[in-house]
Length: 243
Image (cartoon, rainbow, N blue to C red; front, side, top):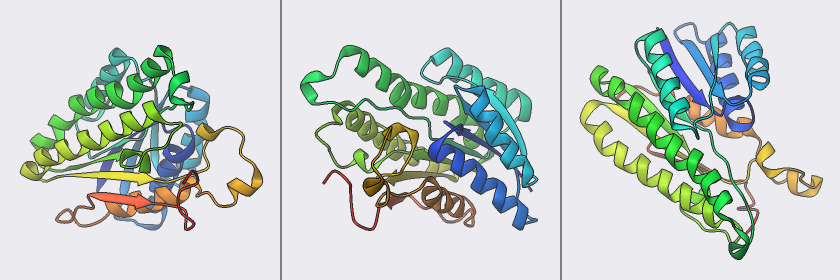
């Protein structure tokens, strides 16, 4: 059975790992036939991930789009629906952050973070959810963060947007329950991704890797349609890095 799966922020980090995990699953599960649509701002990154996914036999397309621009976000949704006519899974993974003391955060930091994490995520989901609602099936993932329910001093804007994403996920779930659409909020702790920049080896050794998040996401999607994983909180075994 074909599954149309759109993953944002798919060029790097957790999004990349999710795409590859779906592709790997298709190689060992003949009943699972994903068509992956990988979206991010950088075509070179996308093509690299797509090549890996195709090596497992998964049909894979790339879409260059910056969802912080609402026209690009809605354009992405329109192209997916025009091309495939439906959508089975939306993985809202694209996200950015600026990490500074509260007093040093600027209006530009605010606009940069809100545009992707809140505005882009909201309007992309708003454009795509109705097709799932009409089909009475589908799955929407929000890759938020433990910062969606726990605050960190250097993450005022980031925490604000992640709390907002959690609110959106919980609101959307009210609609999903009426039309058999599953909504999962995935809240990872510290994962070694490009967002962290340079990380000392000692710190890296206690962080999670992107595939640690990808495997539970794919598992949640593959559960019977009668079953919904509403939240996944995934932390390093030693707890949060900045506690």
